[in-house]
Structure formats: C-alpha cells, structure tokens
Length: 158
Image 1 (cartoon, rainbow, N blue to C red):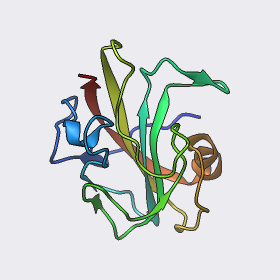
Image 2 (image 1 turned 60 degrees about the horizontal axis):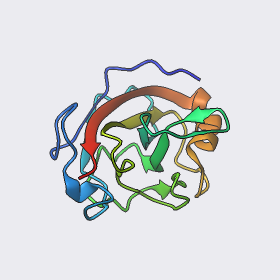
Image 3 (image 1 turned 120 degrees about the vertical axis):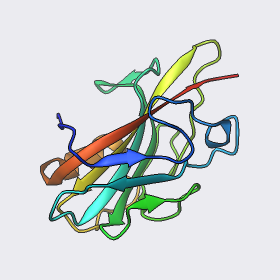
C-alpha cells in the first residue's frame, strides 16, 4: 500500500517540521496528543483520519515495522484542527493495546526516534467502527484516500 503526498499540509503550533516534540505530548510527560491543524484538503473530502507512527521502533509484527502511537478517524470534513488532548473522532487501537493516543517513549538508550503524524483525507463518510488497528484501518480506507501529508517530529527519551 503506497500513498503519494498531496498538497494538503499538516502543522502543529507546538513543534516545527522535524522539530522536537515537547515532553508534555510524550509518555514521559502528560501523554496527551499535540495540537494539529491541516489545510488544503482535496475536493470531495468527506472525512479525515490521523495516524502517528514511529518507524524507528525496533518492532516487527505481521510483516509491519515500527510502532503505532495513534489511530484516529471518523473526523468530519468540517474539522480541520485538533486541540491538545483531542477527544473528537473515533479512536482505533494503538500498539500499546489501548484506544486513543499513546505518546512517544522510545526504549531507554535507543536515541532519537522520528514520529510521523499523518493526516488523510477520505472520500467516505465518517462511519467506521471503533477499535481498528492501523493495518485494519488502511485495509478499509485504501481506495478512499484522496490525499495525505505528514508532520514529522522527533523525541529522545530523557
């Protein structure tokens, strides 16, 4: 499954592209999701989804690599931003085995990891059931992705 980046942009007022994610948004801090905002959604967008994935995590399972920190979907097209600690949308299951956001927390001594926050614009109504894993979510929405882009943050455990 491959998606090309679109002209849609994703940003946070809490960290810059490739900047350090503040500790309040990590497992060592308040473990709440950072504020995010996106613009430039493609025409015919009916819903959005947010994924946070750490490809640097030393985990391989079922042919997938890295660690999923957040799967959030069923965000109506009228929503183009999330405040910190977002409660909108429907939560999927992260690799901590929990619904909702689980902040960055690389293994001790593992150095700096990159965290890819993805926004996806979908041409389908926000009607997916709760509790999807990232893989299951992508299986359901792949033909419905109109556009996507990413914000990359970094974090090293203290």
